[in-house]
Amino acid sequence: MLSSKVQALAIHLVWLSMGFVVTACTAPEDAGPFSSAGEKAIEGITEELLIGIVEVLASDEYEGRGPATAGDKRTRRYLAQQLDAIGYLPAGDNGGWEQSFDIIGINATVPDQWSFTMGEEELVLQRWDQFIAASGVQHATATIDAAEVVFVGYGIDAPEYDWNDFKGQDLNGKVLLIVNNDPDWDPGLFAGDTRLYYGRWDYKYATAAQQGAVGAIIIHTAPSAGYPWQVVQTSWTGEQFELPAGAESRLQVVSWVTEDAAQSLVSLAGKDLAELVESAKERTFRPVSLGVTTSLTFSNALSEVSTANVLGILPGSDPELADEVVIYTAHHDHLGIGVADDTGDTIYNGARDNAAGVAQVLAIANALQSLPQAPKRSIMILFVAAEEQGLLGSKYYAAHPTVHPGRIAANINYDGGNIWGKSRDVSYIGLGKSSLDGVVRTVAERQSRIVKPDLFPDRGMYYRSDQFSFAHIGVPAMYLGKPTDFVGRSADWGLQQIQEYEDVRYHQPGDELTDSWFFEGMVDDAVFGFWVGLMIANAAEMPSWTPGDEFEAARKAALAELAEIGGQAP
Ligand SMILES: [Zn+2]
Image (tube, helix red, strand yellow):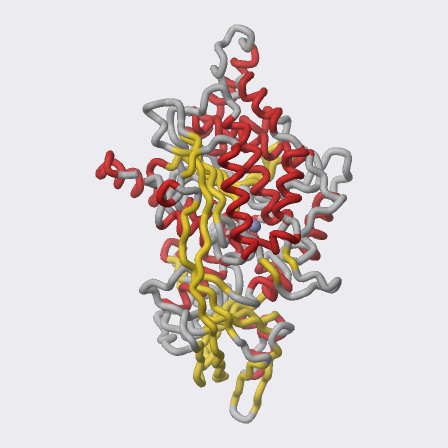
């Protein structure tokens, strides 16, 4: 629900825009959110421009843009050249275009078989078809030695929902078997079918480690994950990258199993998976020791490499507001070269994910720069690295921001693009979370499009791309999901297209630029982001979180810190 303050802002903005339309001929240039200068600037956001950029970045020459590869360097060089060419100032380290950071590459040699024993009986799971495992530690060896497997339900400890699956049980040295997602059957509990951070694998692994566990096994189902098993296979295989480990507790082994494999595993203990999962839906649930033990040891080849975020800035024109920024992000990496698909293709071109997002942000950057007067607040264009490895570039930026988080007005993130044509709807991820809602509605109305909330709230999209790193440090953040209502198409066509993409192209070598791409809708989405960012950059106040939102406290802390250190902050 919108707060009354947010509604008031939205109404105010709509009123402003309508008022401006009526008085357009007498109003001074740039008087309203949809100025004639802005209208002229968006003429530069064209299909040709977007196609040209996607063609370059998704070409085989860029080798799928895997972190710290030749393709990565080539990509960064290209982006810096583009930002330079359109008139941005370098905003990286030492006056350059890059903010570089180290990442630890972990190449695990995971055995093809993983066995579990119960007395005399043994169950052997096959890697790839039944389980996927990766190292939880940045050491030469990851090891689980005769550890007991304990079913811990959702593996959630959430005081605000009076929910704790662990019940203080000693899980030191155990391997936890965990149901994916968060409780989704009651709107009053974990936001119903909206996946919260509690429903994400990163939360589950981190929490299992805090419990002292040595390993965690998440049970995959397509509905509970929001993606099919093959995405688990491709995402968790091959070299994995992380920011260097800090002092946090870590698991030795992180893993996933298919639902069938999980059934076999609990059958070994004489239990039924459906019954266990059912029992996990109660607050009174307690961890269930399966009496099954398992060992798994493998070696890790570690490497330390570096990659970089690429960033440029368009200084704001208002002396009072220019030290605040609106940050556009799009990750520039993809999965690189990997396992061949059925056609023998090994290059994960990542055309939609995320050459398309980069193209939209560059087109927006160009349009904003072409305004006769720069927006009041500064505009930062930040192409983050290593998103596919766990949002590493944006996490690094959030931990080492070049602008104090209390001065980052908002983050508008592009991850993917509409490749299906003109749409009547805008799928807005983050609806209800912040005052960005009002701006989004105003711009959507201008485009005669309907704002729809996340159509797949169970997928936790808000936490799955770089906007999450900004929300985490309190910056109101948003991005656009996939629209579904396409002009000239039947009602179910959009969802069919999305399903087809998810099944055969998402994180596969087949994510390539083809003749079946339509760029009209992508132009609309880039124009959309142009106006949203411009309105935020020119507004009197920075956006704010909806009271009670999970990220409001972080914003308040950032603003309080800024008030304290004031002029000393970057
Ligand atoms: Zn992506």
